[in-house]
Length: 402
Image (cartoon, rainbow, N blue to C red):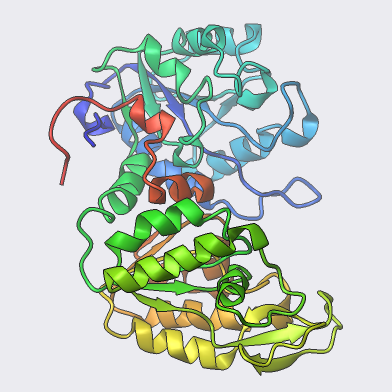
């Protein structure tokens, strides 16, 4: 997969359109609670500033359904960018309306214009070529640095690329880094290579599991999805979340792991409760002692020890999905312990965005990870072996970069 990058383009003094992913969480007062995605874009923005570019930034936030909604304005993002870059950020009042167009035309070298939420335009999520053409008319170069939405064929991600020739569109540093760690990890990992896959449903990770199996040496399954595997093996799982229509798929994955010689790990004990409530009584049980009227909500201590032993000799660890309902303290211990064990490893440690990224940050071990993806859905689709629309649109002929 060969992409033109910002370093390959003659950007000096030019006007550049950078698609970022500033879809950050806000509290009830509109304050940003996690600015990781904004900080991740700074390297590309600063590179363009160093080359005296006039910069137009575009991003979405939330799902405003194609119309202006004060709740989803990018004003908090403009304020945070101002704080991080120590320079004025010009915020357009619209996306491709008169205000945005006038401000884009007047933009000078070294200045930054932030367009309003691109999803205020109904054509954004429909990959509308007319909207994309308006975006493209604002700048001489297009840079995609929004890995988190590169699995979406949207106007500011995919359609816009058709209005730039191969020498005037490319990847930002963040997008380049994401591809390096995910795409190339699956081709040439340092072994032993372990994948830790958690979360609530097998259905959401099925293709990723199938694609990963031939590439890994060890696979750990955690979270509620483990109960589908235990039920497929004939064990009682109580009221735990199970996808009965995927029992055959679970059996196939376990049989395939055995055939390929992949060491396949399931949790051997669980924290269970009669219902999912903060004040519900809990107890620890082995996988053979699940009560019929209780549900598993976290992995137990024996499971975390087992997984720690399995981690010991690994040189590459890929983790996507928590081990339990970590948002509630009494069901977070398994995920938190595993996060610490992964952090202690000397392996290359890649965190697959989304809940897992939030988890390692809560535990305070995010600095110990080699790389934390900014895109949960996009990273999952890369693990499934898919070519993402936003990335495919930037590919050029030639050998893969190493």
